[in-house]
Length: 407
Ligand SMILES: Nc1ncnc2c1ncn2[C@@H]1O[C@H](COP(=O)(O)OP(=O)(O)O)[C@@H](O)[C@H]1O
Ligand SMILES: O=P(O)(O)OC[C@H]1O[C@H](OP(=O)(O)OP(=O)(O)O)[C@H](O)[C@@H]1O
Image (cartoon, rainbow, N blue to C red; front, top):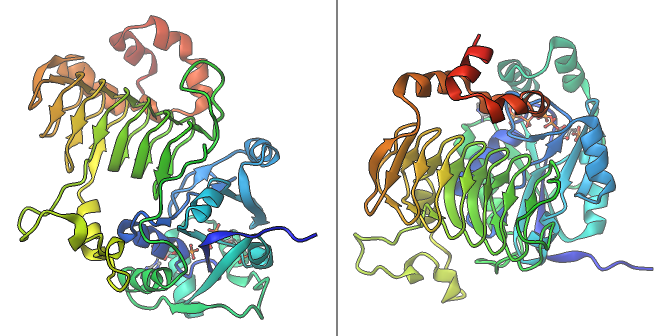
């Protein structure tokens, strides 16, 4: 029996020995990639630390996610489990290129699963690799030595491209982007139509730690933290949604970093992309050119410049129904944006702002308590600790909770 391979987009597997710079090049490429490129966050049974911004999972969480079919591909290496989220299959069906740091041991599996596989090997001299592993400082000496001596599980694999990462990270990332741009994919890939995980609207029920993306939503080139929820019909483009944060229905977020525990009501727009004010025309034919002419490329530089104007939404924030926050704006931790507000300037921590353009109405907490709350950074407590202290969140005021837990 033959199984239909998944296409028409391309899987771009970035491989190479530990320390050659796979993650660094992917992270830099992410900053410049357009919406037709998806760079998923990997699930790894490794605690957060230097280097890659992965989704940390316990062994048990990983096993549950695996059994629930949440991974397209998974493998073991360095005593860890790694998984690539199943949503990338929809990206590929939509014509995108999916780029990920992969084990060389799964290349045959990838070739069997995807219509188009492009394998990019990253290399660097052994001396530089050893020194970079030391600089990264993620592993102890023994683990580092094992990584340095790990044999290539597929030494004879004929790769499609090789990047000698002996220049700057920007050089290596530019080489990776050049490879990505030559892969079979649709520029301006259509919005994802299939639900990623759940068809039910935002509502009661246990939230899986892997989070939920509800029906009709599109999540492109971003990362979703643990226990996140993306409401029905929302569009997230290059958004980092921190752990426990959610947006309700029909939100439109672009080029935005959202902290943890952010509450985003329905119909909110954040980081709306703008048009060039200084050119002859405002129209997107100048940068979405491939949409109009088969021989014209999209203007990657313009997209890169625009997506670098990131909006930042702090931890424990509340963005009210229908509010808008402009590109480049920083909303401080604990701040509240009233319904319908249009936020054009930075919002200080724990301020409440309203109106068009938004102005400060008052502060949620007095300055001394706000500063102590930011220092406490309860949003960094782990899941089990939050559960233990749940009753205190419910019953204590901020000053009493601070008195209990400040060190
Ligand atoms: N071209 C480069 N120049 C300088 N440092 C680099 C370069 N590429 C990667 N690094 C650094 O080397 C270390 C290892 O890179 P990393 O991307 O974690 O490797 P890999 O994912 O292949 O194991 C990191 O600290 C990273 O920032
Ligand atoms: O089977 P191999 O081809 O040797 O690769 C083994 C694993 O090493 C890398 O992971 P990880 O990001 O943990 O390590 P690294 O950053 O040090 O490469 C790579 O992504 C694989 O998951």
